[in-house]
Structures are given as structure tokens and as C-alpha cells.
Image 1 (cartoon, rainbow, N blue to C red):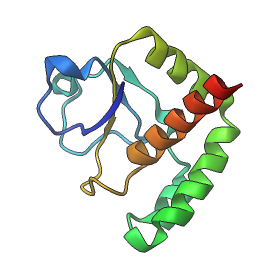
Image 2: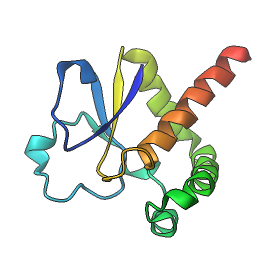
Image 3: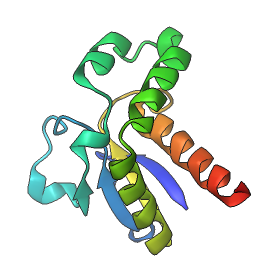
Image 4: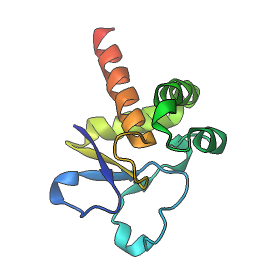
Length: 122
């Protein structure tokens, strides 16, 4: 199972493997209190894409397309994350954005689930 959660939310035992998927460390959060297992900076959207998106809901669909393209060229990190998903009952993708519906962790989860589904069909 792949879950998505704001890093500022309370840590729960059901979170499983906690993976921060932001390029920049979340503001105001001490690393000791973050309770993360992995920080995959390089799986986050590029700085250019992140700035362009600016968490504007009207750009969400185009953001996902562009982010998916970046992910498709970063297969090593994606495959490593997919291995973690296979090896753990639950993986929680953590993000710092305020917007709980339009953020890179949501887009990454969709991409991972589609990749897993595509592999099962093959």
C-alpha cells in the first residue's frame, strides 16, 4: 500500500516506511522530529517545474504530465522506490506542501501505482 501524508501530521505506527519526497527540507521541522526513514530529494520535481507549478490547481494536470516525464527519465530512483514498496507492507510518501490535493507526493503515488499496474499486465 502506498499512502500520502503531510510531514507535519502526526506519525502513526501504520505509516510503515516513511519517505520524504520533497527536494527542499520542510520549513520549521527539526530533522530529529521528522521521523523519516528515507529522504529522496532527487525523485521530487525539478526546481524549474516546482517553481512553474507554484501549487496552482489550474496547472495540476499539466504539472502531472511534466512530472511524469521527469520520473520516466529517472528510472533508477523510481525502481528503487518501487523495490521499497514491494518490500514493505506500507510506504508513506511525505510532503511539506499545504495543498493536500495538488502536490508532488500525490502525483508520484499515481505514477507509482500506474507503473505497478503496467508491470502486472506485462
